Image (cartoon, rainbow, N blue to C red; front, side, top):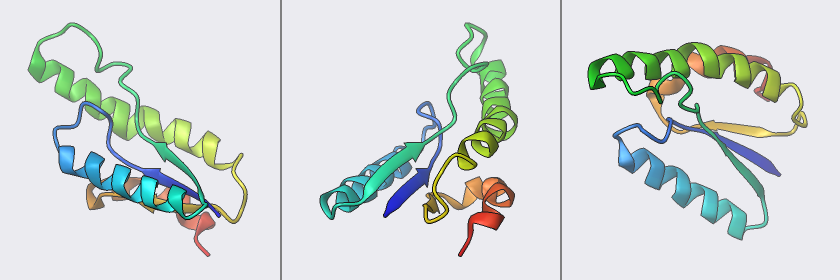
Length: 102
């Protein structure tokens, strides 16, 4: 089975979410599943701007740019793919997954 975990970007301060995602990923891989971890990439948030402004650019990366990427990427996955949203704060991505729910 193919499993895709959707998680926060790497600069997210909630390190426990990343540990949780890694824990699940390694566990399912050890059981023979194909696992991918998808997270927003820092495109605008990488700039050398002050910390407070970078924060808002990371929101744009997470809430605007990543959903565009997600929508394109989901369509190329097998129908049997299981999508796991690792944090309730990422529920805004659920509309992109609603047709993929079995």
